[in-house]
Image 1 (cartoon, rainbow, N blue to C red):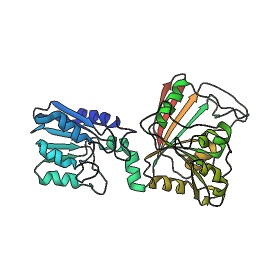
Image 2: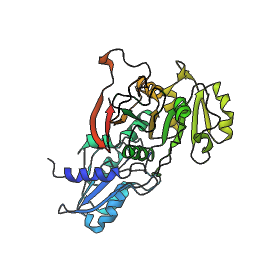
Image 3: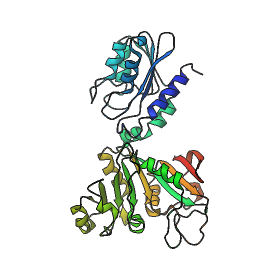
Image 4: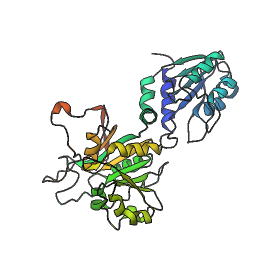
Length: 362
């Protein structure tokens, strides 16, 4: 094992503390070792527009950084943005070596930070725990690569795979601990997405309680534009943003929603429903990095049919309801088991009395 690996793993843990605070910027952590290899400074990117991880770590180390090593989870930036280039701070610190987990594909960096440091005589290595660093910043990397946000799918279901009874009752499937986790998720994403059916059946508020570091826009997908005249989303639209996507032509039905402060966006329909591709393109243009799709079954199915989901959060309650209640995923689905979507890095953990299943879609 590389002797610097434990320090890089710690830097990755530091970086994760910025989740929900720094997007659309990347999560970055840094550790400074003095010339004798002792940790003398640490830091992470704490908030969007604030100092980067390297600046915090080097400031904490002070003169002890001279002749030492900077361990950082992402290549130091070399351009002016909301803050000065991190390469300036690195050179001024006097460190002799920089070890980065991965290069930054952001066009204004893209190897430029490494090149500038090497030209100034600093020893630079890239690639220590790169896979872990890339996983940490998957949402940032996807937004850069595709212009679209990272898509989290979430649902709660019974042991027999139901998200409601045959009568439509769904409160509450999961327990308090699982609901707390969901609110935590809402508090670090840019949007929470549901379909018309969820608005009609549940009249949800879709806010994070208690609030998290981000205030997610509430997004409703309704190709028909047929939404209730009165509901919590419409009533609170001037307090927390609401975006309604409707098929072009049907958006005219939502004039009252627009008058109450909702943003109504007409989109071309896709096979009778809204185009998932068009929705994600619009949210990506808004620089949304993470979105949480909370359903219902039709919306989940549409995202999975479009191969547009990235991460799964599933809460299974120790309950059986039987009957003909709905399942969590609709849509066209797979006709052959060989075509089923497979989850990677799948884990199961207790969540109060429930089980929390988490994984990534290949």
